[in-house]
Image (cartoon, rainbow, N blue to C red):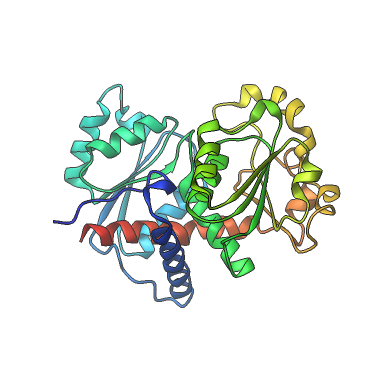
Length: 308
């Protein structure tokens, strides 16, 4: 009897599974562009739970499920107040009787883990305060398209260490990367995730407190907002800590002349990245956003295949 698999973290899947899924995403993207996206989810129904506002995640997931032939129901926190009006366990058990998969974008990573524990259908993590694995699959797909490879790409992440940074560290535990993290001493990534990368021994990992040193010869410069959703009261403090890590034209000139710039969006233009760079010829920000659609199609289709 097949057992359900989840996608809560990149560490839930092996290196081979991640690479195969990226290849699958490329195939699905090409077939979609040719107007022949396979109906991998035909006759299936999915529920999406949103506790955070969303543009790319909601639209890309709804379109992905539609293009794969499935049906999607989107639910907000107001509708059943999971963990308050109804326990996480009860929600998981009930939705498992109605749905073929549960997708959730929320604050607490522990809630997603609990939902996964009690659900009888696959659970896909669309974002928590701890990590953002779907974003990283889209990023990895974009890097493969632009450089023809993912392994050993030199990626320099600049700014606040957050759920996206954590997922980059997870990816470096599974696949070989030259990963540089450039941040202030006050905004360092979790030590246990850094240790996991170093213990795995697959990737080079270096942490810098000077942006100019970190970006030297990097192929990808990556940033995110300095205060994530739910942390806006920390913005003034973060600005003081991180003003030296802005991606601007001056910093871009210090790196590889063929380097590309990524941002997972939404962006605060002229804060963590200048408008000039974001709209410039080396920005692939909107390619990343587009690839959320195709990466998530591959993830959901693979979870469905494993059930059968």
